[in-house]
Length: 178
Image (cartoon, rainbow, N blue to C red; front, side, top):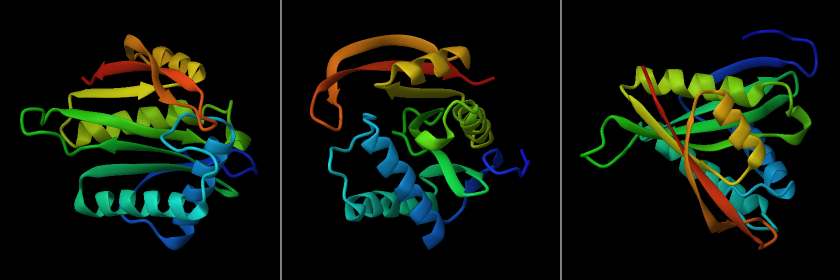
């Protein structure tokens, strides 16, 4: 997708490698999501060092082919991201996992999450996956996934912690790719 007025999405693309500028953008999106209270595996305060270390490990997974990393960009830079974890146990070569679907708060409610998910599904199909799974601690994300055709499996109470330390439920979804 390509439009260029400020504030609209300019592109969703798959990164084959992560540049320093892209690393900066990914760190900013992750920091914003954690600061906003999202349960995305990190606790407050999230230091830039921890965020950079995380994205550097993701970049290594991209380089090895173990994961696909997609980004959404607008005129100001990266505003969203999602990963497809491709490396699975040998008895699950058909399965992938969607992880860290993040959208910066300044870019929410513009359909970026739905575009990222559609692109992640396309990439998974291209890489030979026929089943995707994911989990989320966000009611807003649950609505997005259900509207996108994902099947809700169930929730586990107190599965994870929010960045401030309070427990939150986690809901699991799957989607068969055709």
